[in-house]
Length: 181
Image 1 (cartoon, rainbow, N blue to C red):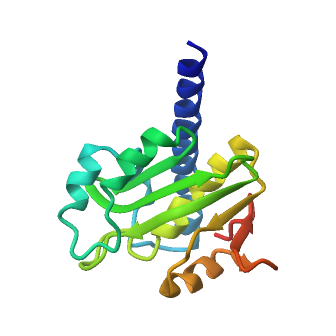
Image 2 (cartoon, rainbow, N blue to C red):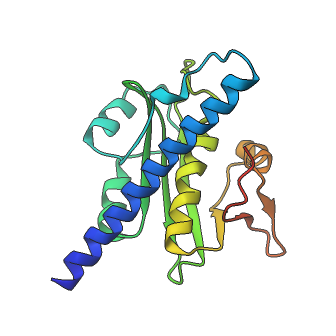
């Protein structure tokens, strides 16, 4: 019974982080609207768990970099992991999987991918949107840093634009609440 309650608590943490990210996206939309007309309405962005519907939508992506089916097994083994499917209305635009280390001092982005190929409404915004949820989740867990595990060469500059930097040990990290929007 205690293990079941712990699992439910973690599910609530993840749900709360996704909901807070949606609120942050709406606030970002408001700031963008004040600056002038925008092409994308971030109020249509949804943050959900990676489920069968997301995996089915991902199967239709052109040349995805990662195999996302593995995430289901990882979620079962890692109850503290955070999985995020980023939708724009009914279109899956990005996926993310992050996992805290044992001490919870760092949460690692294991995989993060925007839909490759054809343009989609959130093109070039997936990393920012995923970071909204990861940062909130890291705050809930009491983590101090977010780390990119094995960043792809082409993605390093995107992470650096968000405020990530290499630490003395060569890890690409950012302090929690250090997100640049």
